[in-house]
Image (cartoon, rainbow over all chains, first blue to last red; front, side, top):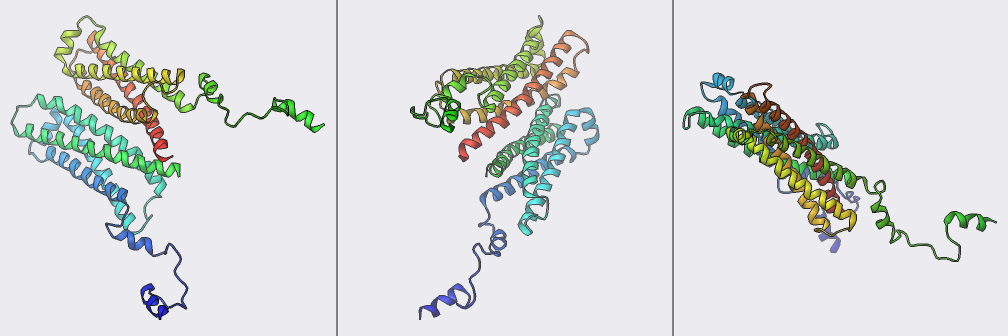
Length: 185
Length: 185
């Protein structure tokens, strides 16, 4: 009687050998569900998305106006801010692409170890470049006419650039933690 | 015959009990000699000294000229750079003081754990503030007359400030490594 009740729960007949532990199918099933993925990966994905959003917003605010070309020529500081944010968008897009690859087919991109080193290095670099670009753009805003469309766009761009910098600081903490775990264990 | 040859090498007679391993005296003796201290501590001390030197040089270059007051009033970016480097000097001096305390009497200052957290946080902060201050000062240099004494002093100050930033980046890596080791083990 007990054999009859147990076998439907286990999902295979007692004659069939049990699946090895951990099951080779357990990871692929677990990794496709959002809630069962490791929290570090979820947080990393969220931070990448936020950095993409803020950096894209910052770059977009500068080029959305009709007088973009003359503006960027007049204030090279804004051009620096724009370039830094475009590079940040490209890097964040790569990281999001890699995260999605990891979820779909684990390890289709570069190896995890190389990726951890790359993430750590570029997160730090992106943070320093973005805080530098945002800081440089602030004095150039003071030279503009307050309330003009150029002034509005520049302030929005610098604020979003700072927000992106904060996100990269958090991402650098996270990738540093991941790298430490990899080196130490 | 074999017992006679072994005992002089070991350094004590067979009747004397061997010293416990590790010896209770090994740390205090080792810590007073430069070469036998852990390399992380030596590297940390060297980085603190370099950051103190560079930041002091950067601040000193700005105030050494007679026309300092008017210069700092005319270019608030230079004032920001000066303030950041003075704060960096104070922080580096505190770290050197703590390192010397550690060598003389281990743990006379705050606890090692709190110190690791403080070092990690403030190294990161100092790096971001210094790169921001150095970047902001660059456009203000472009407005000065090339070759004038003010221009020379500002260029020297910004270069030293950047050097100090690089040192803080390395110090942040080191303190992050120390913090990771403390958390994980």
